[in-house]
Image (tube, rainbow, N blue to C red; front, top):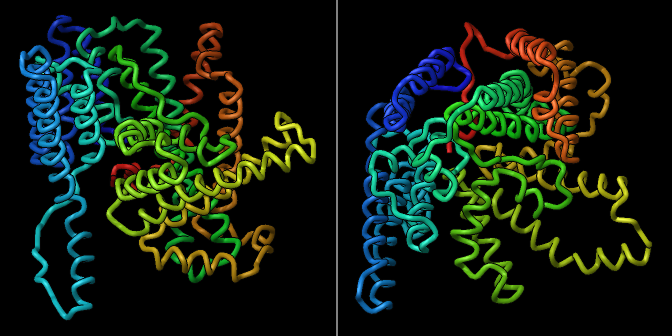
Length: 498
């Protein structure tokens, strides 16, 4: 069930209405039932995978909690708790590997063995990648680590814990919530006010604008150009690559914002997953603003346990590469994703190495780093670096990515920016112009947010009549200008495939 489907627009009011009508003590049961129904609309049998992950991590959490007050020697307690955590990781990551990485690993093993004239028979499994498996697996494993570290209590109520793993607003594409934030909210749900409902609806409208009006419109142009990258070369590919950076931002941020809005209607505050990432002045800062829930997950549960920056500068760089390499593979079973992750890690290593040189140049030239021009320059350089890396993310293979890069920089055709040729890439003049206007709206909104001005909060302070005129106008604009596809087919979210 997609957020931008008619099914969901019927599902949500029913779930919300029942939630507020039933007794307070059993509301989490209703949310759990609704969450499993929401997920089973894709493939009912894959709900068993969520259930298995839930049972394993719940039991492991209880066992580790039991060891807290045990009279055994501390070293034995640590050993048993660590063993319990390892079992949880092996079982959960084993399932993730089978569904997401088995074919990739087997094909690469076969390619390696072919060098020695050895050929393995490829086992055939008729399986589909379960939607959201990477998200809910990491959320459940994060809980396991938090209990191991004594940072959160082990939830004794199985159904409440099951809701933590499967809470439908953020189930299939995040944010990957921490047990410290979400679990206690589900244990003691906040009373939902009309103001919270209104805030949630306003967030949903903004999320729908990003997804349906902007991301899905850009998708048409990007898919046309990238799907025929040998025909659309030079400036076509440069334009499509720049637009893809906006597309994936609007698509994923749109989902996260809708999820935040839906959760508010049940009194739950989800973490913010994006914070004006393209306003970042370095790649390091970009990753503190982009997909914050995943970036912080890898920082806390992989980078820091590897040693972080505590064991010298070169060990820090190795840890960065490992973390970003794993992050790349988390996004997809392919070497192109690995290259994308490693490239972002290499950016940060080069940035760290060159930092003393940059500081010396700034001191010699007596530059004011607080000036708008200096910040704009750094933002522009960061965007170019991040956008170049997106080529590997968007391409199907590394070979295709290099072919795209070659076609991008070996063909000189700047005139296509002025002769109307761009209007032949899936979007006519009107739709292309509308896309540019919407991008300007996005930049304006992010610029205000970057300066600490929240548009939603500003709207909430206005008079009643003004707010409702704005709400109704926004709904009409989304319905009129949204890209609904042929026969009103809805477009999936990019991160559903991860």
